[in-house]
Image: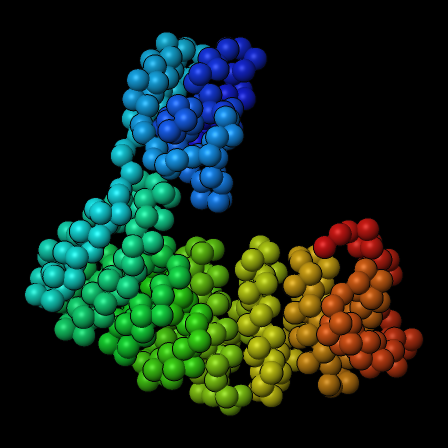
Length: 426
């Protein structure tokens, strides 16, 4: 659709796109024209978005829709395709013939067959059916929504648990396929998370997280993040505690990232695990022993907004422990990195950075370093531009602690550094 949109914009000055070929909603060249009961034709993607937003009228005629059926307009689509071919010399690309969207009945039938194949232990047949669902999902976002709305996540989760319990080494290819589909299904649902949260399922997921290819590892961490991001995270974390290699697998996805998506999922999984444990838990201790703080600080330096916020969230949670604070205070970069991120990323990143600074400034040496990297000035700016009440209280406490050192420590930064952000909105 984006290519077609740019195409219309670029060619409008050179060629007249016939009005009947344009979608009345977007005014872009239609690639999958469908007709409503009112007789008006729209591009499928646009009219589906209109209906899903809760609208019950035809956008063009304003008539109340008696039915939401979308009838493919094959004649108009062929005319558009012919027009594209005729104008190929002007750079117009022929729109492909759209596939018929999957129906609820088709999804339900395949899900029923997956249940049957799972009960029989027929991994081969189950794999064929899972690949069918996977291919449907690849065709369009609409297909993905239809698949998710029919309880497919629960069916696949139950199948995954059954074959993982039987022998995940024997069914590894099937289990990888199931995870690849589950990775784009959110939420998984309470029953689905329950099936994936069993010890046999988690052992398989962690094995794939450690030994799978790049695609398999990404699918595994995305599903693990979904399992942990729930009310059952404490129970799941207790189960994970007995599984060897989970900490190492998540740690190396941060240290040696395979994709931004996997990095964010890994950070969220780590956060859920350490936030649902006691302060001296072995999982948190293991992350610290491996050097998680140093890896996260280095990742924050060049991270985008989303990764930066999640990394700061993990760091803030780790600093709730005495060992975590000690390790953070010993990191040579952390203070400068935190101060640099204040007012530069987002309001949430600023609040997290202040929270971490507030937890670390217990020691005199830390306060002196904080002054040297310009913390005092940044804190004053935060008060001027505004922040939440909780953050404001932390800022005031920090200013009181640092004020003693402010006049007798030579700052190593430009004196204007803290104030150039005053006009920058959150």
